[in-house]
Amino acid sequence: MQDASFISGWSSSCRGKNNLFQVLCSSCVIGPMRAYILAHEDAIQLWRDIMGPTKVFRARITAPETIRGHLGLTDTRNTTHGSDSVESACREISFFFPDFDVSRWYEEQEPLYRAGPICYDEETLEHRLVGK
Image (cartoon, rainbow, N blue to C red; front, side, top):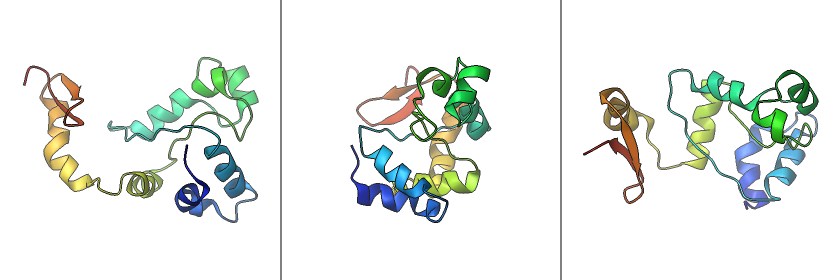
């Protein structure tokens, strides 16, 4: 569970957008959360397709197989968040993963995704080629 000061730093870009800031703060501190960096050429759109429409009622009707269609409670408690642009993703990644270096990742890690099957190494907390 995150505290309100942590979430307020992340969601500061939402200030002034109706009551979105207050809703984000209150809904993010009521339970555990996980943050991920998704690696794919079209990760933002693919993740948004998996999440489904932001409005839960719409998701239940038009995309019931999506995360929000299946698990969403209300429009403000829709179970998941995804960046809406590369700029937002970069800002959110730097907030949740301050030590993450995008340039270093593209140099050292990204080529692994193109070199063959990979797996996640629990000890080093990094992906590696299968069998290496």
